[in-house]
Image 1 (cartoon, rainbow, N blue to C red):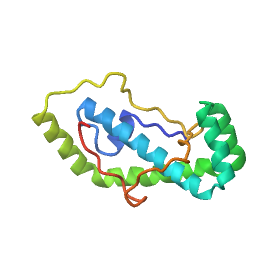
Image 2 (cartoon, rainbow, N blue to C red; image 1 turned 90 degrees about the vertical axis):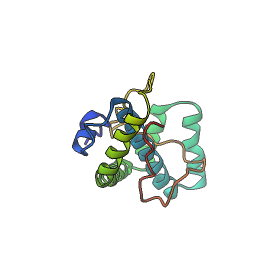
Image 3 (tube, rainbow, N blue to C red; image 1 turned 180 degrees about the vertical axis):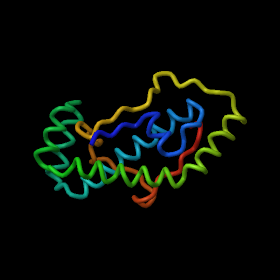
Image 4 (cartoon, rainbow, N blue to C red; image 1 turned 90 degrees about the horizontal axis):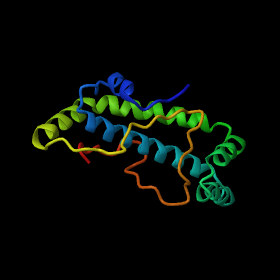
Length: 152
């Protein structure tokens, strides 16, 4: 299954009426949260040696190598991506009324901001590579969506 973080996802989650700049910010937030969660789950399963190996691909900016390494060492990683995506979508769906209300009230209070080079992320589960997990990744409790702040 291909995962796309775009306008269609926001419509599916009941957030299609958000202002465009808020949509971009939320899609980026969802992408970063998904990256963090997948990275944490994989890091929990990696030995120190594996963490070091995986990190080398990121230092070299070798996405193809990192993807191949993940497929070889963690053949279930695509399922981890899918599982985390499904959980995250449900959390956003449950929070949609509050997110929409905050985004719309923020739009009234502040003039529209320009987000240059801030296109929504297109993400396919076939090539999703989480960040190198050697650095600490902040999380609330690892299970809930961090608060989304409209306009940030």
